Image 1 (cartoon, rainbow, N blue to C red):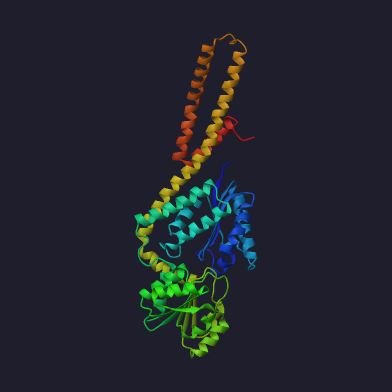
Image 2: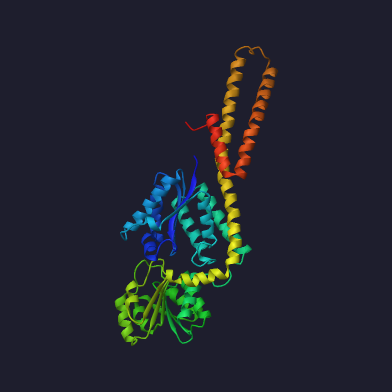
Length: 428
């Protein structure tokens, strides 16, 4: 059965953060969501990719139009649990070569807010692994994702796309540098000591921050990170009491809830005698109350506010991006040829079977009729001769089919369809 690659989703360009987070899938929820996705009629294989900048479903489907509708329903159902409102205006959909190109660009960090950032590849691998464990990955997506990993590696090794400040964490620190005229006299509180927190802490330290408080739900992780960068670990339940000391608060927690609300910040401001505070929210789900921005002398930035900084970063590496795009296009062509070749194998098998059926039927008819008196040696010669005739007749169509699948994907599909129709090879 013909399967097509389909991608439906939304990202930092198509939807604001409040829409993206309303559709986001937490890691713990993927175990339930993936089998539900696979339960849709047109979806044969599926992977869910959910990060702070995108939520996408990658699928292998028998009918791309039906898959588009079913995946949109799947995402709309996820959104309905959290907030009302339409989703269609924010959603994009790709199929075939366009879908392959999109995933390769995502893996190579060409579709990221910060072009060249390395974190997306790790996230892609994590979500692929989750789908594997859920049993929703088959031959098509297995090959697609592993090819995307190779494309990302090739782009990173053959271009300079990864040079310079190329991560969300480094862009956040770049933003902080624009906010403050100097860093050495500022105090920063970091909420979250995971991978993102680790990167942010290192960038802060390398940019001159000397006073850094780190808090995390698991206190041991805060202690471990604090020891690495000479920071001060704070117990999670105690961090609100220490907010008054922070000029800049950066949230990069994996929590799916608000950790700092406007009332708390209002109280802290009074304790600080209204000395300005800045908040940068890098969470997959926003951890800082949006009403914080309504307070005087408080400035709240979220992941979408990093875009202008990221665009400056993109311009610096535009020539490297062009090289990376060329690599992606080459790899897309190779993968699409592989997909096309999958279609040719059953067609070739069915064509051989049909010719063999005809050959066998006619030989049996002749050997039970006017050729019944042939010797065993003559019968073997007849078998060999008719086999050779069939192989010669099939050589042209099969060679043409294989050649077209390598040179022109659309021609290969049309040629295979014509053979199926001419020789009645369609599945009954």
